[in-house]
Image (cartoon, rainbow, N blue to C red):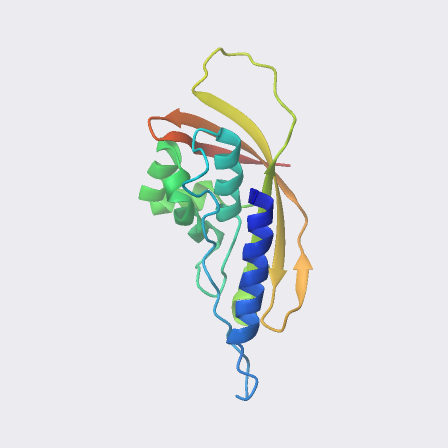
Length: 186
């Protein structure tokens, strides 16, 4: 089963579980369980594939749980096992993480999503576009990653957000490729 099939299966399973978690007999708003985004890069996949690491790290970073998370940056630790030294240092300095890695949207929406117990799921894919090699350094990769996000509310309503593109900078470590930094492209 390829990664996309696993993603679709995971999303369908998650939606089924959310539907089962809703109590239709109790009055008041329902509160479905909001699961953390599960890693899709499993042991059978090669952490030596920088593009797979970039896509999975971006999926985790841009999957948000407003009812559980303080802000979008709260998703960064969920990608810890895929991060390189620069982003790991950012995680260790929480104040710097908030100042440095704010995704370019959400402000008032975040508060509304929190109040309404909505969640934001992301899908990420690596562009086939390649930059011309300027450095023979094979320990670094730059890849454009497209991100599609969907907001879902407990009542089943959903909204597709405008897509985002990031430039992911990867570094090769002893453990394989890791996302070392990223820049949201405008």
